[in-house]
Length: 257
Image 1: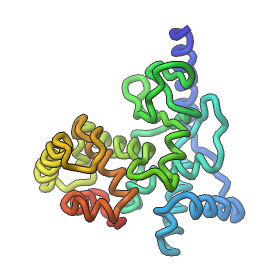
Image 2 (image 1 turned 45 degrees about the vertical axis):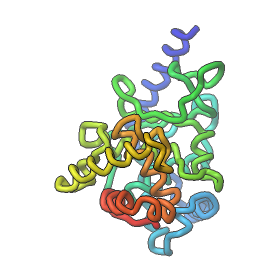
Image 3 (image 1 turned 60 degrees about the vertical axis):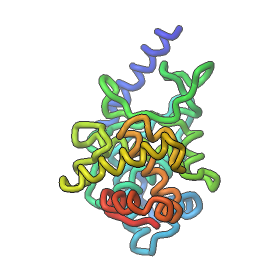
Image 4 (image 1 turned 90 degrees about the horizontal axis):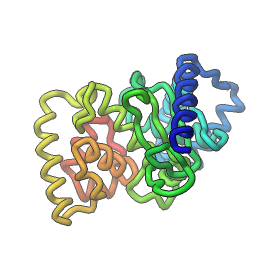
């Protein structure tokens, strides 16, 4: 049964890859854009905090992302809310780089709930919230709708799974998922950033930091976890971790706090 399910999943993803090569047709009518803006104003705090010019640029980036990236549902229908939250998760980290394109992403697969290593969203051992594909799944991102919605809820705390996964893509864009996004971080800051990471990882391991302990898994996860905190609770992050905040502001060319 598992082998059959994996085969079917591979076929679905293969079809998504072919479809993902085509540009998506996005309705840009004024009514649709207004509907999108209503969703963003209601659900996305980052967007709410922008001025009129910033909101207009954010919307353009959201629409451009949706035109370039196919979003498919497995066991669920994709809604405008899904599209807006996924696109917002992509835009927020690169908002300081308006010409950025996710060249290492062609397709996003949205599951209704958490899933397991066999890509099943029912049954036991379902603990995966999101992942960036590699190997035959290169160019794919898998996300749980449950985690997507939770990341933008008022009770999300410091965590946002979708932003976490897009940061992995940014990190991966230079050829190595190593916590040093060389396409964003000037070379002279790479060594100071590494030292800063390892210092904070030691503090987390010793129980002297409020950063999610998952950050000590490796440098790539440290970057993704701290970036979630940076964008979700910027004022608190700046207060608790001023040096990290300054470095992430340099990496992402923006200061959300």
